[in-house]
Length: 145
Ligand SMILES: [Zn+2]
Image (cartoon, rainbow, N blue to C red):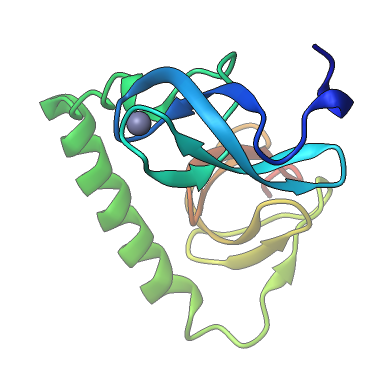
């Protein structure tokens, strides 16, 4: 049976949230050629049509609990984000990032893709460690004098 032969009252298979499985349903509401609402023949619940081919959400395994290491890194990331906030928020005029420019430790820069950041460390010969909101990145810069 193709979809356009289905009409209100037809029997279709749909996933049922209550039954937590694919069951026979009556079509209740059609929107164009698409089944919108169905009624489960087993539990009589009316709900949106869910294709029996789709994986039911309830059957998906629960997201694994974050491991201790992940938690620690989350906390660390949070601490970094707080530190970042303290460093960049008082700065009204961040320096525009450029690979030719020389930066000093503590300078607040603005990067076109990473946003605001501040220089953590100057790493020779021409790299600075910049703390952005989400991560620390080694960025190219001008050669230090
Ligand atoms: Zn049901």
